[in-house]
Image (cartoon, rainbow, N blue to C red):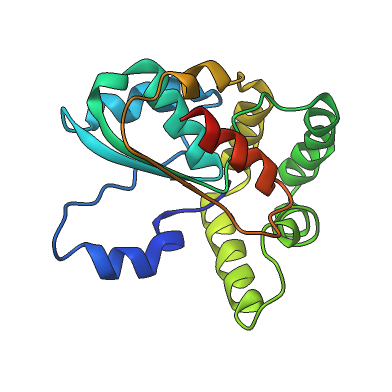
Length: 188
């Protein structure tokens, strides 16, 4: 959520010499069905697909809409479940704060601290995440929050994945824990 292609900077540097990479924005709609449809409308006929966190949710929706177009998939730090009611409710005051001009506080104090475990580059990465979020702005925050609130359960989609799948996450991931990824692995 609230990230742009800079999130994949090292991967872009390592892979772009040998492959064409696309990083479609996840900012223009407040539902995953439309986000996925827009990506599919601009994607090649067949492609490998990777999604991290919210991007993983979009990737699962792409698989649901067009399974024959995906050659392989990587799902990273993501969650196939519909959003829990308590998480949906917690997003409401965050959206109000963001629209009132306090996106910095929402991202710095409520969102991003849950994304990374302690480590030598944690603060540098959190600063990048905050910079990406501020670059996208409060309207995108609200659209992405609404999309997350409205997302459907993708367990049935995962059961139909018929392509090679790579599933991984950080051991200390709070929003998308290890057991969730073990379930994704078992279903694909």
